[in-house]
Image 1: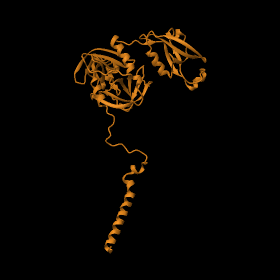
Image 2: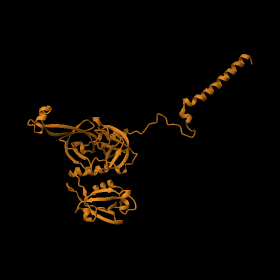
Image 3: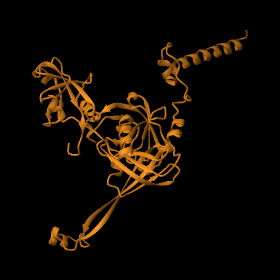
Image 4: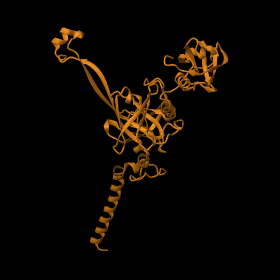
Length: 381
């Protein structure tokens, strides 16, 4: 081999070694994920891998969600000089120039068609005290409302509109709703009709929220905003499992905490409102209960902090006649353990008129069985 060829071969070899060395030095910087991954770990999924597809569910459910516009008309006495501070200070409340006027306020919300003949479910607060209600379906057709029935206790209202073979969402079983399950919230937030948002069920049986008297909410992180009230909460089987009712927010907008009336409760209320225009509720006369705490358990003669304490009940009520007394600790109803005051309050409110509730109570450390006949609640009960 000539001297020139030997120098060329050595130079090529050095370049090759240098290239390998440079590659080994800079590879971690170029691909830190690969360099840090254990050889036993699986390769990452492709960026093109599809996520969950809810388009078919949205296509089936969205046509059954309607827009509701409710106009409230209130009468006020205003003076044409009301804005003048001289007249306001001089006459005060006895201003002789006051003129009766009407003020119109329009609230916007959502509703769900649950039967093809025009039965629409929404929230009571959407249509409460409304003089005029307009329902607009997904095909932009306006429908006249022929009847309205409301239940403020659960914040559910039922509207009847004219129409045949309307798109409807089938009822689902909300007792099967599981935390972590995918759900869609469908409604008309900010007048953006047929808006679909996706999330999961964050909690079930949520109470003590302070929205209505009877609370057993499904909590979800699906985006719910003003205008969504009365809309549909739908599961992945395209079933209605809740009526979107409220949000928890410090700003007035979406913060990931929304609440829906579960379908099993809403359906019972809707059936009664549609057939009779009102809801019959059971009444036993227990007016105040509190949870048993670890501190109070010992003084009540309990081995553990479970059940609820009866603090007050009405005289001559079904509970009082059955022998229940203040200070009794209710530990089960019809064989089901009582976890807390909110659960018991819901069970008592859901009790059917004419049924008999069998309560297991602890009194001075002794177990007692008390049977209470459920009567119909009167408006002043």
